[in-house]
Length: 55
Picture 1 (cartoon, one colour):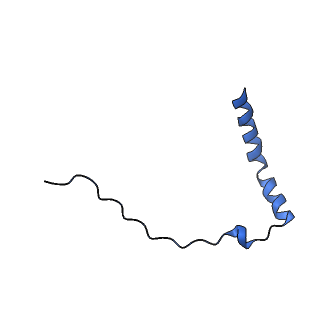
Picture 2: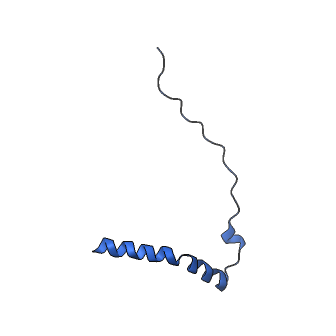
Picture 3: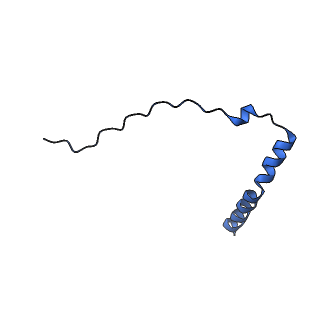
């Protein structure tokens, strides 16, 4: 009798962890301000969506 079920996928080899830029870079006021400013449009859009959801 022929088997029709699929062979289980072989696990992929474990990848080496990538360096974490958050750990490598110091947290400075300037970096935090730039990061916060970069997310302004996203925060505005989230606020718009939340306001529509609450109506």
